Length: 405
Image 1 (cartoon, helix red, strand yellow):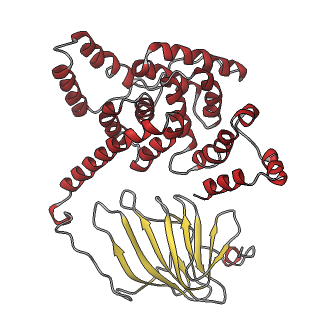
Image 2 (tube, rainbow, N blue to C red):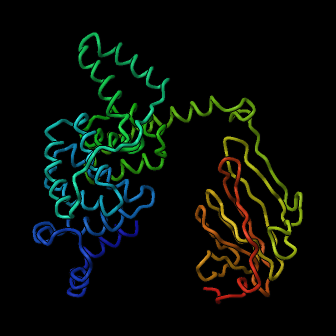
Image 3 (tube, helix red, strand yellow):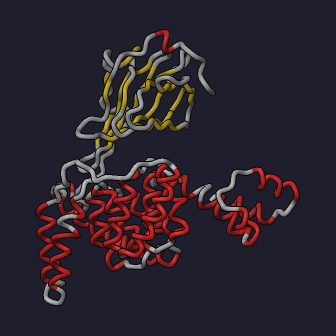
């Protein structure tokens, strides 16, 4: 990892110039950390906040939820205030912070929650945040079949020994707390997962990891939660959770494979080879300017959502403005071309370049004015649609601000 390598290099070079550069750099670690444990200061600034917090696999808002949950769960009151402030800056609402604390009272104990309230209150007052009230939104309706199965498990395994605990689990924990609209089901699952890992309770993780992904957390995000918690709960607890999550993901993959139609089962599905130039057609005039040719189109079988084609543009030809619900990737095969996001200068590309257009970004792409271009385009469909075509690119728009090379 480049950032870690840079950190090691900086630690090794104890020159006056390096130290001066370190001083000028914006630091997150307090000065006292550098006075007592300079290595910790470097890892704090260069790795934790200079790398981990910037990783796109988990949004900054989610990282704040995970961090605050870990701090509440482990009773690290002195650190809660600064991270509550960061959470607010990252888009977490005051009500959501309060509900996170409420939720974790059940999972990590009332003392930790009450201590967290005191720290959060100080931050709210410093920011002139008014007292939080319960949301007036409708209660969340949990999946009936999943709840019935969960309730039966509690009645079978808990009720014979601790009937009151079983009753409170069904009526209060899941019947009341989990239906409160002050925190989304996904976020409740996220903070529950974080708390369980932080307090070293991986045996409780399978149920809540599955629930989290059923509630919308992706596999990539779930894995990144463990990575993030390596810094806030310690490597041993993060590493202990890895094999648990691995088994959860493997089981989910097996169930998905079993649910696939028989003809798409891995052992029965065939590899499809689309030969070059197959099914060449002209690009629809409504969506393209110029005589564009589309060839070798392909589409993955369900549950895959991917599709693509080779698109050949003569000089000056281009697409209309359009968007993709899940984004698009272009691999430039030959020639030179341009791509432009609405409101930004167009950018030039050439053979071997790869262009990524994020979801829902209005854009166009095509050949340069004096050079033909061929690219291979790949996109995923959402609800059956991979593209939304908009108005055509005018000659003035196409020939506008010079391309960025």
